[in-house]
Amino acid sequence: MPPSRKKPGLLPARPARAALLPTAKSELSSLKMKLKVLQRVNEIAASTFEVQPLLDRAMDLVTEIAPSEAGSLLLLSSDRSYLKFSIVKGPAAHKLEGLEIPIGQGIAGWVAKTGIPLTVNDVQSEPKWKKEIADNVEFPTRSILCVPLKSRAEVIGVVELINKLRAEDYNDDDLEIIELLGAHLSTLIENSRLYSEAREKVERITAMAETSALISSSLDVKRVLETVMTVAKDVIDAEASSIFLYNEDKNDFYFEIATGDAGDAVKQIRVPWGKGMVGWAAEHMQTLLVPDVTKDPRFYSKVDEKSKFITRNAITVPLKPKNKLIGVAQVLNKKGGLFTREDVELFETLARQAAVAIENASLYTDLQELFLNSIRTVVSLIDAKDDYTAGHSSRVTKYSMMIADQLGFASEDRKRLELAALLHDVGKIGMPDAILKKPSGLTNEEFAIVKDHPNKGAEALEPIKQMKDIIPGVRHHHEKLDGRGYPDGLAGDRVPMDAQIICVGDSYDAMNSDRPYRKGLGMEESVKRLRQDAGTQFNPALVEAFVKALEKEAKK
Image 1: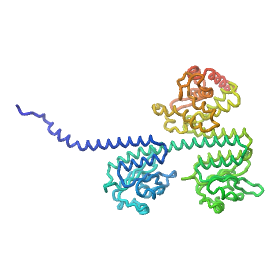
Image 2: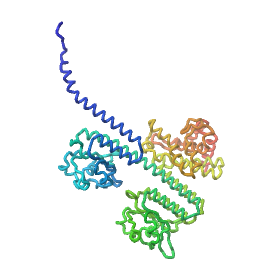
Image 3: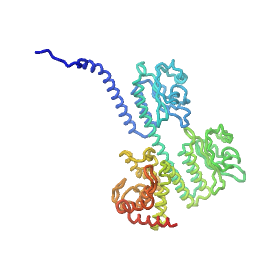
Image 4: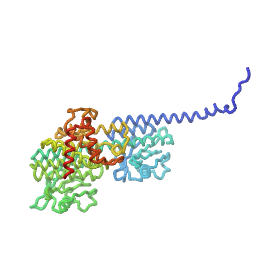
């Protein structure tokens, strides 16, 4: 047999492949780990929307992926001045949870300030390390890996691992995998926050609706005020709330309602005219927001001295129905931070409700209007999420009322339709801005979220007894006459009349309004398209009623 011949240049092939094998195996192992992390993150994301349980499970994963003696998740405060230990794993957890670190101090503070990850395998030689924290919690620290958590390129917190197990050093692989996990963790935190904000806004809508309904139906002013102040305290997340009434004879204020731990202790206390935040708000007839009472000369410390309550911050609102001062409402001590402008707006709304109840609990018409104004305030917040739909709910309500008037609706039917039209898009309140403001080309998943807003709106209103009759209009305003709408695919007369009317107004406003990708179509073209879809999408009789109403308005 002749000797085998090998082609020139192929002799090194097998050794070269052998040399590359360890690298390939390492890359494959790294890829498997990344896929495992993504799978676990998805499992965590699907398990809950609640912030604390979600973060707790995420930190379990962090300390598992890069095995360490301890791990912490620190979130940045709203004013970006300090980090707070939100989740802590390890022996010193009970000592660290809730602890605050000024931004820029220590390794975690430095990472949060710069947005740069840092690995330190000998903390004793690292000048950024703050030895005091480890000493205070009696936890020997050897090494630290710390990565920033970012949302929209802005730091929102850090993840910190301490003392890699088996006395090993943290390496580049550890840093890479924790950075990957941190990126997904940031998304989880942001989504969870959006969910919490949406739920809070729905709770606020519900609170305003319930207090408005109570005021409208009750002549028991004391009960009404207690309810309003309890709702204010709970929804704004404050430690205490109160109403002071003005005594003209003595020219001072006395506690009419006081909620919170010191409620009973303050009821005998009186505040002279012009004294403290109460006196200032009354004298100037203006809302007063004080973020730190220790730095504000208007703070009246005698109330705290007598009640043993410690006031940190406050919102104070004059009660002035028909511009006549009758008292002052106040909420104290925002739990976990400072009062926001949104808190102020909500409390002003609730204070107005209380003022009307004090002035005359029997003024049913005025109180119904107050209720509508509260709803309009919330609706304006919903519409404000998208610059291109600002005023949308108000316009849809206007168009629905035009149709109702053209058809001769009775007063009660008109009121029901008005509320349903105002709140028809309330389900969008928790929808991500990225979807609402997307110019075009929604993905199937994004469109599914959009299509679910009628259901979300109905669910938000369902607990409110007084909203029972308006829910069909809210839930079914995207149904079509031919059954091809959503969410339930109703057809013909099965689509509630209120929903059919809102559908006409909603569609007209969508066509007639500017969008990022096109200008509004104008009245003539929008009417033309309504008529083209009459009988399939729209009730023909309602389209014609609306057209007649538009023509009447155009002649004015």
